[in-house]
Image 1 (spheres, rainbow, N blue to C red):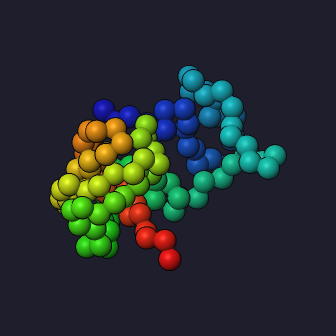
Image 2 (cartoon, rainbow, N blue to C red):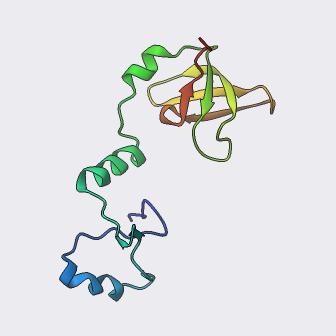
Image 3 (cartoon, one colour):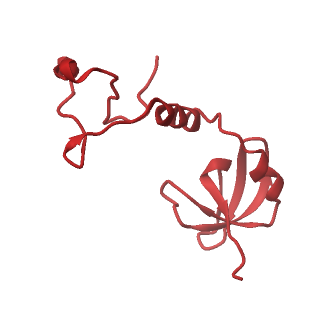
Length: 119
């Protein structure tokens, strides 16, 4: 079974003349508008979202530049903007120690960014 990438959104590729067909599906209430026009998400952007959410994005550069002990910041989720220290890194995940909260978490590499020293 496939689950939606975004629970509240349905992405359709449909000519303007057939836009009303989207409302034939239960739960579809309206189109998302941007600057007074139906929002357009290009195929390339949809593919980038799929790649990211399926965990297929490449991590090589990030893995090579991070090591245990480095300080990072969480980019998303309930702990967004919290700083942590890397305890362990594998191919797709990293185990972090959150010193302020006193516990450890395991997150995707794509969910963190290194904290850069002030120049």
